[in-house]
Length: 255
Length: 294
Ligand SMILES: Nc1ncnc2c1ncn2[C@@H]1O[C@H](COP(=O)(O)OP(=O)(O)OP(=O)(O)O)[C@@H](O)[C@H]1O
Ligand SMILES: [Mg+2]
Image: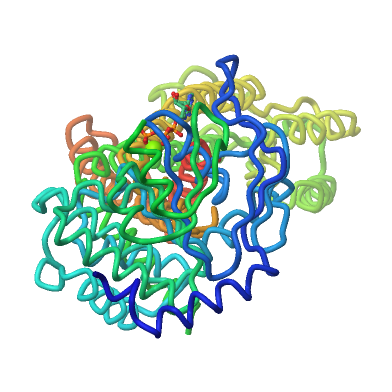
């Protein structure tokens, strides 16, 4: 099927991932999240994601997948419980420390968050300027990353002139351009056709093989079935199950 | 390296923003220019008033009328004493000289009487330092008590009135200026906030990809300072126009003679520029603060 799954290369890396299980990079202990007086969005979440692991996060719409990811890069703070990233309790992180946490986390936003009046290249380069990378390096790195997602020829267009799938790939490029230690991808293939989905997933597998911890939130049962990864399943704000690909996909299809 | 990269990024971002949304920035620059023109004009008018008071009260002299029996020696002593006390220039005027002067103003006066009824007097031109009513009054009071002195006259009321007028004008100017300035500061802050509001999405995304507040703020500060300087440039242009073109026309029209032309000094230019830059800077700091939370 895909390179990611069958090569001995990837098997070796998965082995590495298992070894790394002793070194958790994302942990949650009894985490709850409520917005105002609404019923809580997340209830008593406990999870443990190891360094170098590739994890799917699934569940029906509104289950709280995006919210859970937001707790990791502190777009939202947990109402209760503790969130640890690379061993640090981010619940206690002061606002001034947030930027330094985020520089290690690439995020593929479900709603893209691209700047409509800046070129694709500038949008990708944005993440590099923020850390004070020189202009030429920004340009060169951004172009290289755009090539990875197959958009080098669209570098100078404005995002609104791109198709949904192309925009999604720009977002993926922006998340990857910094070589982040953690990649959080919220429906990264939601707008892609099957062929492109495979391509992007292979790219993510490659990135994962180079040591980046990856969490992919998705509805897509075929994705989960094809890539046999640990899958966390959210339902109405609680983590109901944790199983390996095929079984998880089966459960999803059965509903 | 990183510092250079950041600085050039900030400068580019600031210029780009000026370039991308010119309208909002034109409004901000113009409102800054209005505030700064007001400030500059107030300063020019104030210095004109100072000069006016100075030149008018320069005409008010201290005149000491002496008793008829005063001797040459007493007069000489008095001249020295007066010059010492006022640091001014004292001149003895004989009855004959006084009458000649009067004759010049009112022809035929001399024929009215055979005797010259005018006394000896000493006229003192008061230097600027002693020109305040209070100081003159002090000198007059002391001189009046002297043996040989009949009376002292120094246009007290005129000096008083002039000083009072200048003070009132300056106070009124200050109040008006303060109100205008306050209004414009509010307008400037609101305009800058509007300009930043247009870029809130960019700020949000910058923060999501790991920008510090300082990093987000920097281009806005540069932008604010640039706007302030641009506003100052326009204000100085307007002030120069007013003093170099407007004033001569006004003089020609009203026929005011001998008026000292108002000037935009280098110092005033510096003040306007500094005020403009800091106004833009402070306005930006206040405006961007709202968008940096979370
Ligand atoms: N800022 C917020 N304020 C109030 N409620 C919120 C907020 N963000 C999320 N919620 C609520 O939390 C619940 C979970 O939302 P979330 O976006 O995490 O779901 P999701 O699993 O990502 O769904 P989808 O698959 O549709 O993206 C929703 O019911 C939503 O209304
Ligand atoms: Mg979501």
